[in-house]
Image 1: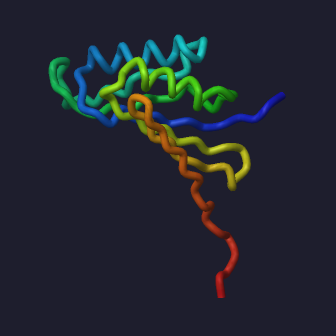
Image 2 (image 1 turned 60 degrees about the horizontal axis):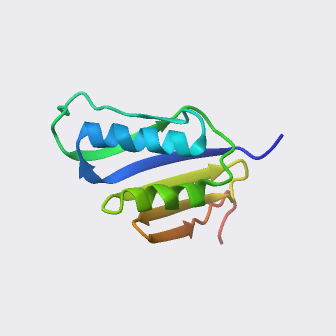
Length: 117
């Protein structure tokens, strides 16, 4: 069984498509399977530098996401990453920022479905 989370990763630093693909390969290798692919906007050329979104294949069990992203950020110390996770429970929603040896995880307040007043 286990706990599933929906992940979204953004490469926030502007890089070329070649660098972005290398990063996606590194993340997939770190996880151990092809979890993400590169979203390629139609208006971006191969030599353009831009931020990139990684498309997840599906929700997954990735319990080591924080230590894996630490390793990726150290491998690419000048690149900033944003990772967002939404778990099976609506209270499980967080955003992580990684760059070099720095990281920051923020847990979001889920929206309320109850009247405040």
